[in-house]
Image (cartoon, rainbow, N blue to C red; front, side, top):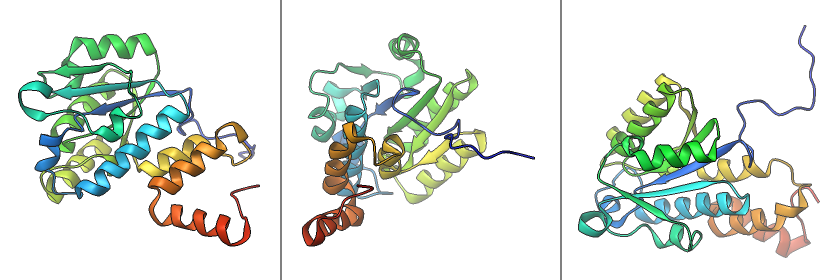
Length: 217
């Protein structure tokens, strides 16, 4: 008979057990993205970037043909990681760039979280490659996008069938916080939720303004 203990599941993310790779959040890639509107995409990308920075998650930023075609990475990401290097590639599959593999090996995490454009090309490629090499792979579905709803959905299904674990941007932030009694990250988590958490953020503003309420305190 199983015995319940107050222990988090092994597949849950925490700040120290994974790395984040943000791929091709660039203007030219966003122009053709139709499965999610640009405002929501940029908001969710900002939420993910701020979550990773807040919890000190090792993060790899990468672009494709930045100077010659696809343009710069979203300002929402660059503002958070102002001093971080951005690896610019020619490969559509990020995983086939040796610099990425080298950085992943340097960081040394078994779990990898991916987000980027487009889902069916620039996310499917590295996720399936990482799975083949024994990594546990997660995709933040609403910080990704594709040229059509069909393209995004089929890509997500293909990855899930292979073993990728899907999640959302807000879920990523809250999974890292996990316990509202963790005071060292509480204020930053609430601030990020208010700025980028949609209706949930509005709820936090309301609770604080109307009766001084706070999550778990």
